[in-house]
Length: 319
Image (cartoon, rainbow, N blue to C red; front, side):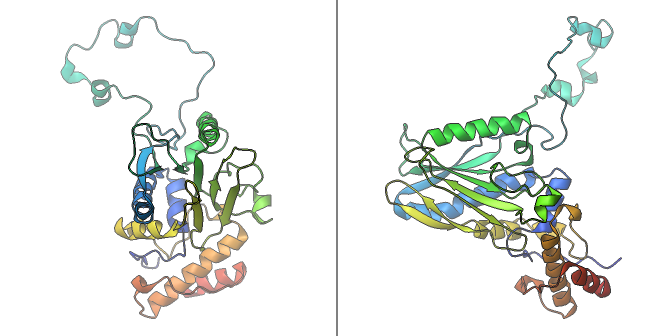
């Protein structure tokens, strides 16, 4: 096995495919979600405050549960309950509280610590102020056809009907997009037909949902996270890079310590052939730079554009 090759600086242009594959495969998305939203808020405020707006963290409209993104107990249509709770302990409660488990002491509930969203207000924020912009970063458990996903879509519609600019960030390639007109990247047929793994939507439901503009920009592996126009009140707007706070967080959180560029991302087959080629070309660029004695913290370095089969052969030879 080759020695691991790691770097503090993100070696991808944009989203790190190795890391996002790990977070989705190992159900660790919560490690990233709120940290990114905090950096997003900070970066937004640098641009908003001169225009007399302010971004603040709010509770997301998404549902986060204990063991988020792990399979949970199904929600039954019919349940049978024990009307005698003492029966659980053989007819009597525990003799001593010293024998109770931690879970019994804290009486854990199913829902804990909400995800964070970012809301933009005119500054100063008054008691009756309405948000101007609402930003959500999607989590795996709030996509697809689950009850939580349906709840999220309902709350998204409520916010849009309130004439709030709604921005949805989707950096998850292993779950379907929330917009029906888009090709589903999780479908192998669509992956080869031009579906994209990531997207940012800016939905401005003013004057209403039927007539307000909606812009969705999709992007691929090893592409910078887009810069998007965010409309505010009246004619105010900003051009905002969603990539910059991502790269800052990647370095400050030392996420690179968990990325080994000598290995393929987990669930490599869940990427399109075009994105697989991009991943291998990016990996080649990293390993070639490392072999040449270059400092990876000066990266990311230019990557080639070898077809998938040639990139696989070149990588096998290099390793």
